[in-house]
Image (cartoon, rainbow, N blue to C red; front, side, top):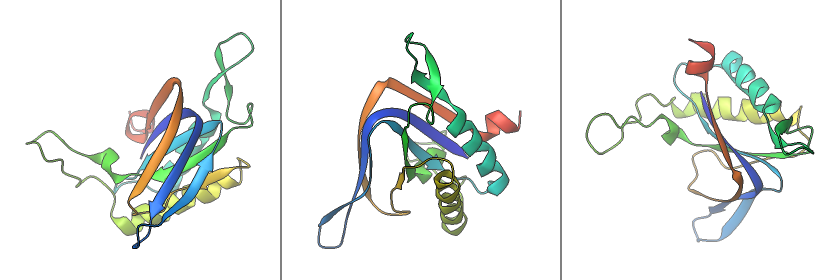
Length: 156
């Protein structure tokens, strides 16, 4: 499982329906925009560990300007976006392969599980639509971006 965590001043997700009518499916102010990639080997136990790490990340500045505060400490929100392309394999040729990405059914179930668990811990959790063509807007704060990879964090 991979989370690309971006500290943002604001972020939103817009999806266009078949008639090209835009719908904002998620919008936050201060918090994290999290792009979520799920692999075939992921499960709820891995998701729980990733969520714990995400919620505990201390990457907001305290009164001394040090990155020492968590999402909860600053009353931050989450915008969670599924993104299978985080498992792109670009080692051969110029066209990425996505064979390591989880099958859509597994990925959707785990994405929805992550949303559900996050909502029990963070008051404002917004989301994209799984499998949709989404347009993501963000104002990256810093910029400050962290990559959490379960293979590196829990299988070393």
